[in-house]
Length: 427
Image 1 (cartoon, rainbow, N blue to C red):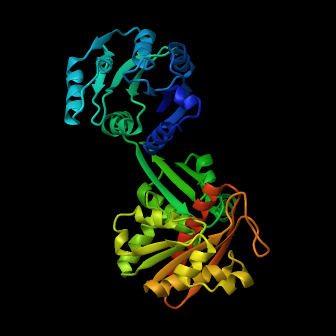
Image 2: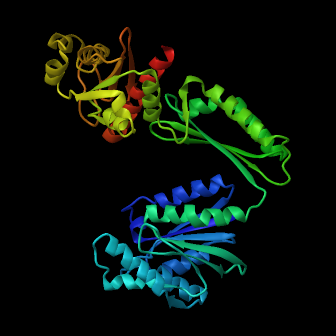
Image 3: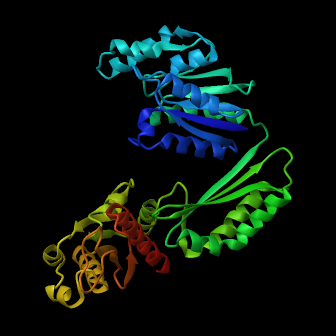
């Protein structure tokens, strides 16, 4: 099955907001074994919406997102009515629901919200359980001439996701009877995409051979970001499957791929590195503290995003200036003069000092020159040192980042958490 996605909104075209809807939809559809044939984004005009529909080539279904609001530039319903020659009808039941939505929040529905009561006469309404624009499902024909399922959802991400999960994904899944999808995403950090691909080359060769033989519909994708690489392994099993035990075979592939990744593998999606660390430290009854300089509290922020972090994390210190490193952590000023503020010696001293001061099982530290300014005789711009201390051992790790401050902080925070993970593994 092929599905096309049509996103509507000037804000997407001018770069005001990121088109996260298309990314999320595609991932969910792919997980069902459905091929996403096109992404297309158009502006908030009749002409643009018509052109978008004309562009789509013979999909089995189309998901249209955006343009269902109450304002003058929300034209999706009128455009679809004209394009498919389906009259709009007023759904009083839905407007009653919208009024109740506002009343429950002690707000008054304005007159322009009544615009959201108009739906296509042949459509099935998809109720919105967290907003005011209902979705719709109807049959229509594009210029290719064949009828297809068309779904219309709001552009607001959480409203779209609710309709997709409750209605659209189940409907599309039922149109692919007898198909099983096995999917696993491995999360890898501390290694780049090209090095990881080289490391996993034997497995990649096996996958390519299976594809060439037509023995299995299996794929492996490398999905890099600034902090990690995702390895998405996908197996689609249809009625004419050639594998005798696809579930067992798939698990063997996952285990093989995981082994090739070695210690760089840390979890399966949707687990995050900070979730893994909190889970492990809670299980071991261990405590943690952070002494951050160049990361400015980002490590602490990531850890405190995890429920239950208070069982592990005692607190954090943002010792940004050298004076604070001395006042709060007791780092002797002579170390700065001898080794530099950004150095292995200072990183280790920060971690050791906080571990002892707060009597924690582990402490993490960072010190570095991020952004477009900085550097001295001891360390150049982009140099970062990480320290991790436990009650008996202190380890360090040095990385170099580019001049993008935000991306640099993300990379350092990830590397620091990963350094802690590796120290825990090594005991």
